[in-house]
Length: 198
Image 1: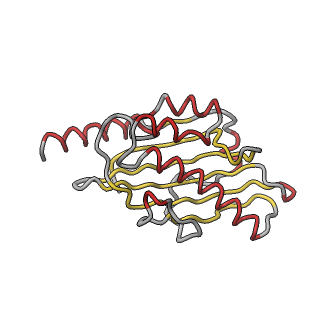
Image 2: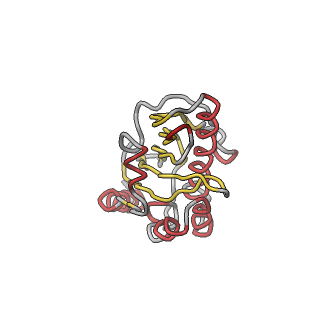
């Protein structure tokens, strides 16, 4: 193993040990919407394609637990919009061409408080440390929805993102808690882990 790869692995190991990032802003939303941890392995093929940046890697997205009554059309609409928010963050934060400015812009769909916390954790929340990153090889999103009395009031996106770095792989998993607003869906809390391994 050459020095570059050894340094990359050491950096990834440090992240794995310290990569738990939790925004406690309205954290009840996480518990209320989600029934499991991030990156659910049961998530199967779903209805959202990746953006043009990673067109070769479609996002496997599907609805998880729905608390309350919600018709099929509303479920599909929530899944589409929430997945777009997750993909927007991924594409700006973890693509091979990402810069610090791109990562900062990736939090445009985060609330003010969540954005401030995310900016303090750029080593986990994006590719802002100057390291080479691998290509995205897997994108999985499972969306739990909170809809009391048929009114959508929140969602939790559980996700898994895999990066292939040649001789190793990086796994980014976790949850984003989102709420609908006049400006679209906004991330108000998050729990993200980043470490070595597929």
